[in-house]
Structure formats: C-alpha cells, structure tokens
Length: 233
Ligand code: DX5
Image 1 (cartoon, helix red, strand yellow):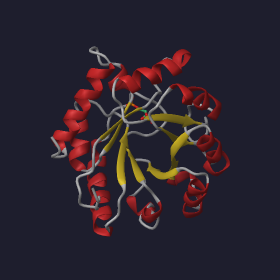
Image 2 (spheres, helix red, strand yellow):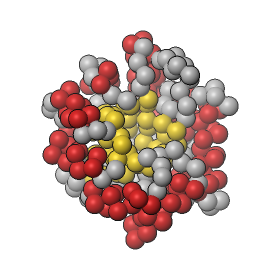
Image 3 (cartoon, rainbow, N blue to C red):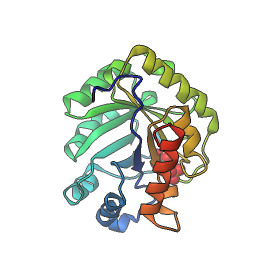
C-alpha cells in the first residue's frame, strides 16, 4: 500500500525497558517480544542531559542476538554526535536525538543516516515544534515528550496534546511520511488522548510492567485503546 501523509498511520506499541529487571534484560526483552510489542526502546541516559545514567551500547549489543524485534535508542545525552554510531553498531535501527542537545541538528541527522540508522528527533515539553520544522524531511519520526525526560513513572503532561496535533497537521500539510511518537506517562488512562491528538507510536514503561494481568494483556489493551482513538479499530 502506498502510504501518504493522510493515510491513517498504524499504531505501534513500544516498551521502554527502563522499568525492566536490569539483572535479566535479555529475558525481559524476550518477554516483551512474546507479548507482541512492535519494537523496544532503550532509554539511554548519560547523567548529564538527564540525571539518570543507564545503558551503554555493549548492554544493548548483548541483548540484540536474543530478540527479533527492532531496537530504537532514545539518546538522552549531551553529546549524541560522539555516541550515536556506537548505538547503531550495537543493533539499534532507529536513533532518537534530542533537538535540545544538537546545535547542528541538520548535520547530526545526516550523521545518523550515515551510521545506517533511521533518524528521529525528540522534543522536550517546553521545546516548540518550530525546532524541527526545517528538518522534517530528514526524519522518520518525531518524539513529543509527554514528561520531562530522565525518569520513568512520571505523570503525563496533557498540555502536549495540542503540540502533537499541531505537528501532525504540519506533517500532513507537507505531505511527509513521518511518525509521531509520545513517551512518558502513557497508560490506559492517557493513551487514547495522545493517539486522538495524532501520535501513532506510543512508548510505555510503567504501564506495561505494572499491569497486574501481565505484559500480553497490557500490550493488547494499550493497542486497542490507541487504535480505537485513532479511528483504526
Ligand atoms: C523519559 C523516559 C520515560 C520512560 C517511560 O524519562 O523515556 O518516559 O521511557 O516512562 P513511563 O514509565 O512513564 O512509561
């Protein structure tokens, strides 16, 4: 099917492994794959751009052979240009850089592609979509953060919904094939509003791992809520 800017975009449910058991990351990734996720997001944090310090490329490379679903790296780091190639080499097929950490964002996105990965830009809650309007032709996805990055389990910032809708309208107006991802506080109570606003890639950490009925139920429930909200059900 030829996908255009107005074609309803398929919903993807993407777990953050931030809440996972770090002592069993390979098994946790296998359980996520079995639960039916579309890909896995690694929250890479350097202790500078955000307070937390998480996964180096070697940790991701160690998990790569044990899982079939694609990996994406959310690079919450001060120096993405110095690190991005290593995350591509570790097996992440999509790299997300923060607009706030890239003084030469146009060049950095080219660097991501030269490293053989798909490119995405993340926007913190206070960053306007104007930060990406001149590079939308260079990205496969824009991540609209619905929390201030650095920790899992934070409260969803609903005031991001008009920003999601504004970005979706800009993408459609330009006739571009670009996904919108949201990340932070996404769960049963918030995913419908985010999808209705225009997000089609939904990252969830706490909501997945905390579901008392297990990962498979959580993925199925979130997907059905998002598809209904997006008019895809
Ligand atoms: C930024 C991180 C978190 C994590 C998911 O701090 O990117 O958003 O992925 O967080 P929760 O647990 O809210 O889904």
